[in-house]
Length: 184
Picture (cartoon, one colour):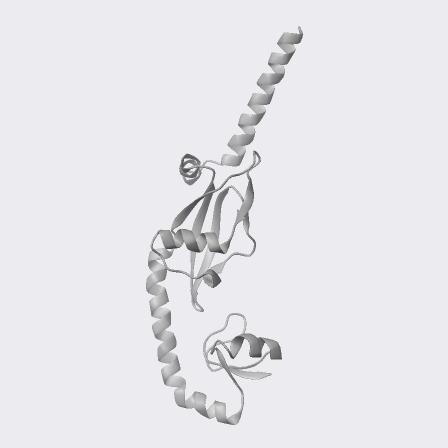
């Protein structure tokens, strides 16, 4: 199906581009969300008549996203979660958790804007992209820890997982030496 894009769509095209997409993508996403028009002579004329207004609306949305992105870019959000001894979380951190943490810090973002390929399932610092507008993307750091103290240590550059493993190895060696002394 040929459609005329009314705004920039990631991995597809920009405002005014006439592109060919699968019927379901056009019917279920592009057309209902007002991101495209079916490409026919009537809609081409309508688009050309409205082009200036669409470009102005897009520029205003981009400027607003850039403004909010400046305050959001580079922020670190701490999420406290329970985990096992190896640093694997009991559960995961999803886009919904990131939106909630950003909202608590005073940043209004939507779940669809968070670019998280897979849920976060380990302790540590994780970079996550947030797409505020088709042309505006910012990165935030998600600090997943078991406590506020661990979060501060991770933020200072300490690798908590390695520290946990070193502590476990030291405890195991101490226990083994105590057992050896008791046996002797």
